[in-house]
Length: 130
Image 1 (spheres, rainbow, N blue to C red):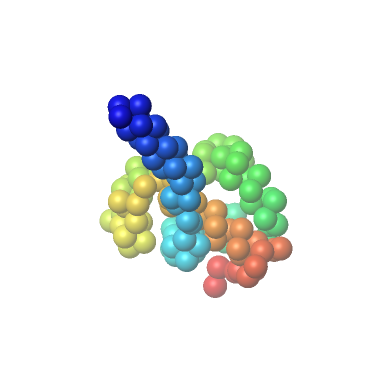
Image 2: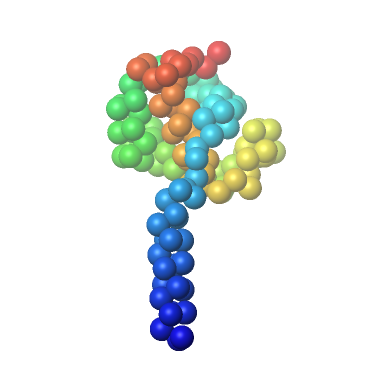
């Protein structure tokens, strides 16, 4: 009887592990759009570089940019601008940062990526920042 219970437990565990990828976070491109337009764009407009539209790059270019994790010509990391520390630092002056301050960094990064890929030059819905 003990071997049978052990086998049942092992089988249940195997099913749980196999189902784990199905439980992966499904990025929310709409939340990424709000963050991009409210946080990223607000900073870029104030800088000499100006606004950067998602449709200014292809999906491959956005993917490579995010993968490299290099912002401002390599001076900063992209991930720092999606991090809770950054959101906390600007939340007093940015309502979107305040709204998303408790969102886990990996989720917000995935949301932002989903928006950029959807809004890319060759994406499903090329987007501007207007």
